Image (cartoon, rainbow over the protein chains, first blue to last red):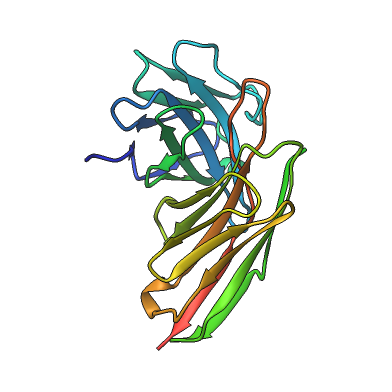
Length: 113
Length: 112
């Protein structure tokens, strides 16, 4: 079946611009996660959605980062006023429930010039 | 705070040379320990979940084991296609949050 998809696969932007990254989870998965993978670093948790509950935003590095999940499915991660340190691969994952393994998408590579 | 340390950072093996990767963890209450494989330019691919000490899981040439402090990923008679970065992650008890805490990974290279 279809896995987690993300778009765009690559995004190059200029410092100060806003960007939107999209994630389509596996159909039927109630939990959705965003992570960030920087060069030489492990995956870093950003935000988590579960059903209609309020999201866990505890991993967002600054108030320039926000995310929403519409209709319990597609999610969008928005980074406002991008900085060079935001350059990384942004990974989305989904799981059937919170107690199941997480399946990852291919990621969006963000480069801020 | 949950912590995961993987060793070695990089490992080069000859084809057929078996070895093990280590994942040491600190978590207040382990909900699950996960192993993933990541190829360059791709997202992590799920391999195993282990829930309690003593548990073992196998898939082809890979076998994952778990103790109260660490997990091992044993690779038996590896092939070049096993070359990848292997990631270990833990899921703690959380307080309504179920994110994974990842180690930095072990980059495995299998030489023909």
